[in-house]
Image 1 (spheres, rainbow, N blue to C red):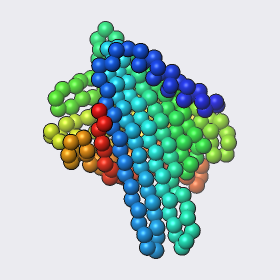
Image 2: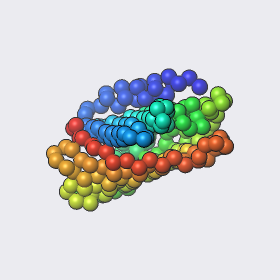
Image 3: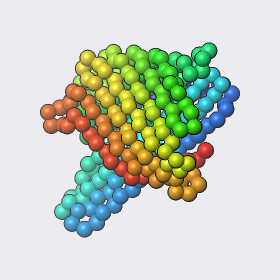
Image 4: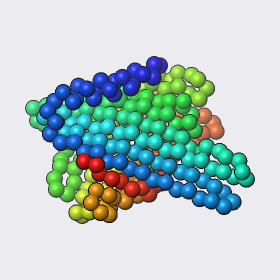
Length: 240
């Protein structure tokens, strides 16, 4: 699989979406850092950028995530986590703006998984079920194609069905709950992800976020766990 194909799809989608008149744009930056010293020295860094763009005819979301962890035990340094994830989804609004057609692309590089990389292209139906002052809920579902290379260098490409849910609840004026779910079902592997988070505003655009992320692959090597979990406490800054 040609890796630049996914990146080209993300860039091309961004150019098409930007051609419409911009109504609103928001971007959040998330950062977490943990360092310990003593008998065991560790360094953990987590970063994330999330952007949302609301146009006359399009509603677009983009995400960039990175995770890095290094351990030093008995003066021996070891990288124990190194993961990058990039995704973009454009939703084209129909006559009823809550009814949409979506295009989705993602690319993931996780050094300590069973895959050298995993990438997805998908299209289909997206719908905003409701949005009010307290909460909002939307979903998307449609066919797609996954591109993957196992840690043994074997291609694992195939047709998939992708489904995703996005629920957000405004607990109070300064606190918010989010639940994101996605799954990509294929003949070789089913890849699923869940992110549950609660954030509380500290001051202005700065918030404190506690999150639990579950990553699951049904087909992995014998020495790799199917489920990866990540619990994090991070600071989030809203740029726009």
